[in-house]
Length: 286
Image (cartoon, rainbow, N blue to C red; front, side, top):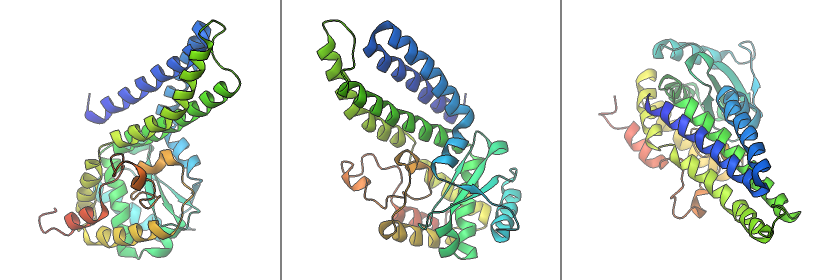
């Protein structure tokens, strides 16, 4: 079992256990319901993680006639990387950004924002797309997509706990008050768990994708220039991204606003852009 397969299995197992734990607040019957819901979520996270990510980002499929340069660059880079041509999407966001998703290279999809196509020149676009295809080649996209789906599920659980506490959730025994306290604790801690899941996706993954992307593109300067633009834009152009999708994008869509409050970047999902740029411009990169 490779590293990403192990991480995926661990994430899905944790999600199933969490669902059962939530259900147990309503007794044995609730635990059974939690098990069923957990199985649905875990199965859905594996088989439909790409569709979940595409839907969450409001991405739409784009034809070659609509975006010929986009298709040309991805086709050329896919051949260079030795992987199948992924499905291509565009999101309506004006912030320049991009992500890849899917179970494996045969089921991969790449999505770019409208802002990326507007802001980046052809050289920079090539660097960004090479980075995303590096994630596809390294099979990072499954663990990334499942992590996003799991984080979304945990946030859903937090809302369940909130409404359960508001309407007196818990068993019908004498421990009702304790159960309500437990539900309130879950409401507070579940979003933190979602952040920890995203942080569990090693930030070194981005450095590796930068390096492989530079090899695929024939150099790292295009991506370095693009990262300068993307990082600056993320700080001034807001993006309506789902928080669980943060780690999937090439740069954080929240422009450091979330990570600034995350205990001095303890839960940051991306390495510092300046460090990525420095490495991309290193003569020993490739």
